Length: 300
Image (cartoon, rainbow, N blue to C red; front, side, top):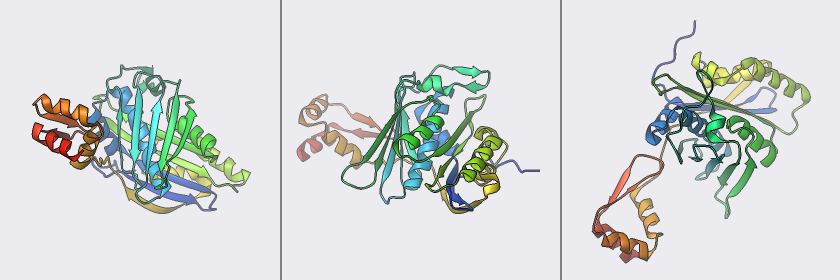
């Protein structure tokens, strides 16, 4: 008998390899960070599922790139009612993000199954921007496959980075519109992986089934990787707590305002009213008085 998971367990991701060293694996429980993101953006269920999957994927991808001070941005623009989904991960896998349109109408594939592809749209692109602290960021972009996000991530790795990958993402939105569970996994073959390893992995993925069902049954990220890797076995290398984390600050907002230029700032100042600036990634509001704006004009 498995114990039901506790309500407020911290989100974390776990990284590892199969015993033979041919497959890199990562899995995440992202329930709390998806809840937080949905709360900040005020998303309706379809948008919650789409945004939550993107946050979950970005957390794993950001953690995998292992560059101090680097960051990874995932942008999904599918032409659907949600508009653009933008999510940013730090090197640990803490994420933040926003969507153009949070209030998306309910579209179901069948009762109880949200149609994420219809929300995101299928005509458009998935773009990954990796800031690896070099002069130029690395940018890879592909045409969307389904708008369901996991398949699109799989296609991105195959086409843009030439890494055979399997990605599964799940966000279960409860009847009361809250996030019940969220999580996912990413498995990647290393170049020398022999065919029998690939066959075993494909069989394990088939047998494990949908990630949402596993999460709902109380399986941990470790359990999920155990199921997916099956006979190949897993060695866990690292566990990292992750959360929804914004890096906004008054200084950053000031820099953004200064970059508007003298003319726009002067117009704002002449209105003589307080000027609130809301962070797009979190619910913080920075208020600038006419005096504050005047000081910024002096800095230009």
